[in-house]
Image (cartoon, rainbow, N blue to C red; front, side, top):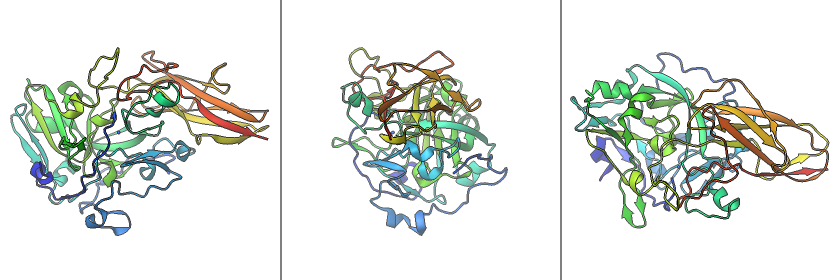
Amino acid sequence: MALDDLTGASVSGSGIPHPREGSHHTPSLPSPLAGAHPGGEASAGPEGLSGDDEVGRAVVKPLPPELFDIHGSCAEMRWEAMRDRGYHVPNDRFFVRNHTSTPRIDIATWRLRLHGSGLHRPRDFTYDELLALPTRTADVAIECAGNGRAFFSAQQGQPAPGTPWRLGAIGVARWRGVPLSTLLALAGLRDDAVDVLPTGLDPEYVDNGVNLGHVRRPLPIAKALDDVLLAYEMNGERLPPDHGFPARLVVPGWTGIASIKWVGDIKVATAPLSSPWSTDLYRMFGPGQSEEPLTAQVVKSAFELPWNAALRAGRRHILRGRSWSGTGRIVRVEVSVDGGRSWQRAVSRGRAPAAGWTPWHIAWFPRDPGPYVLMARATDETGATQPERTPHNTLGYLYDGIVRHPVTVTG
């Protein structure tokens, strides 16, 4: 299917096959100004580059090595880049999960098409029409389903295929846009609608020589009507190209594949819908697994430190980190500085949004030089707590085990 078959939008981008994968400075960010909308011009690349200049590049924004680890067409945030950076991940250091490459979309021709048997009044929206609708703003985490995959191998000796993320395939941003429920109502949602299928405008995805088409994954109508946002702003700015310009879904609590980027088409049906991203990928396969499609994320924690960080002995250090869960607000974080032999309660920095993450800190005064292992485990309001090990699944999804973070204390 050609890109412009979906919406008529002019799109540039390159179809870069990606290996099969199990999945994907604002200290006090104010709310975006009321009535201030992103500009209406076509998306421009960094330093004035045009879409033609970007052909063949999987990611548009700069990816300096001090901020990112690169995995093919994806970029993982380095956690030390978030130290003292405030609650939200700045757009320039937000992780990138691309199945192929970032498309360059002209908003003059872009349309959001709502159609299908689940609607009484199928219709299109222009970008300006979208901006004119009532808005909502929310602090929400987007996290790849494969975040933490590397630890299946590194900590459990059970390798899983796909992008070897540590813990940097997550980011929290302040998203502004239109509730999906509003758009569905304007298109005359039928009472018997059951599924919504958003489709992205990125290049078609080729997996082992098979063209799976554009990235798309169904949402049940109950979730679509609950808290899903069609966002066009990120941290008070127009969506950057790599993060879904001109519009993307933001699906609180669920794995990142649900938050489809570059949305151009939303099908609503009175019968269940499917795609390769809900049948062959993003399911829990393997011995003892349910084989159900992925929905909510799991509990995780990360330190705002480099891997193998070096710290001086005989000094007081404030260890900072963040914990999060797709099923509820974090209520407790415990930290071990001796590889799990003892644990201390960390201090959280205020009541955080349930759909975001909880920052925390703890003081540590290491007296002796040598190697140490830092660990953090969190518990959310449902009682879910990070375990010592995560049951293995074939594609390496939903790692929630306690991560052993190595540091060296120097004399």
